[in-house]
Image (cartoon, rainbow, N blue to C red; front, side, top):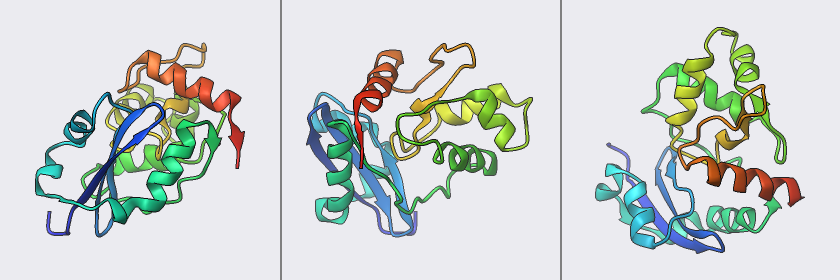
Length: 170
């Protein structure tokens, strides 16, 4: 971890969110948590070496806060995915293209990366997504309509999909 790490936690209408970044880009975000301490813990071990730096993420925290109020904001932020495998980066890049308020299937993601047989691997890659909301893995569902897995749990996945279904695109 040669690059300088920074982090922040902030309150949204859905709970506390944490953000961790390096000089190369965003490393991790959390889904809403019940406390700032829980959000910090959810950022992982890297936060131990990070400096508290809320001003480094001011624009992002504003967009994430707006997102949790139902605004269809975009997240063009630079990401630091240096710790991910090439396959994970490929899955996450395709997932980032899914528009706000829409869903795609695991099968669709697998086909987009040219590996239609890799459904389980796609699901595993999405389960390791360190940047929920920024990489909108909650927008990937089973072809049957079943929500599929989600690191934040099925209830949070449904809540995010409902938020986007009723939200406004900006």
